[in-house]
Length: 173
Image (cartoon, rainbow, N blue to C red; front, side, top):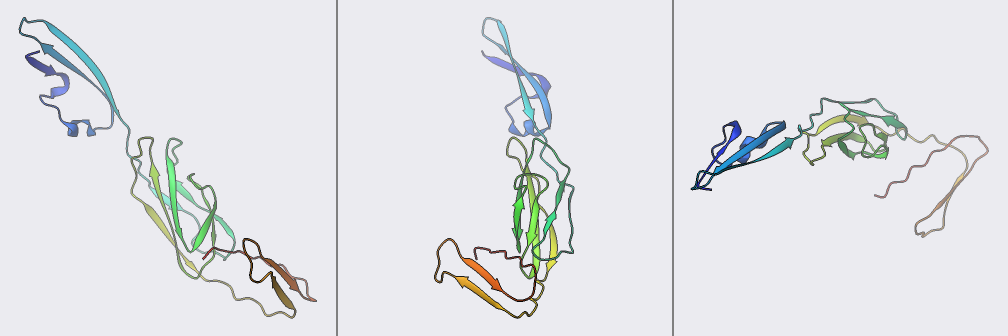
């Protein structure tokens, strides 16, 4: 062809034109030196970039308890990537609703980024959680930790005349 024309006002190839969200059909018409005309069409689909509006969940927490958080809005076509400081994500890793166990002192931070099917990402949003570990109550009795040294597994045995509940959460520091 010696000349081309395109619908939608495009006179030259331009990638910036495809930045609009949604489906757009473009038709190119080519004319050769004999005046013969042919056309070709293509539809370009540009999905919207994810936009997170809120991250909700408790900011007053008790150490070593599980708390639920939620990114809004929820879109089943998005994946959610969570980052945490001062705790662990115990469930819902790529969902909009993770479960978090806070474990350290200082300030905890939970952030989320959403990705659409084309791997376009939202801005990250975060929530800060003040953390403080409760002091261990004094007790009478012995605590045995064995074997020492150990690899992969350790046993903790508490001996006491009193009845009490103990939770142990181990982090790979």
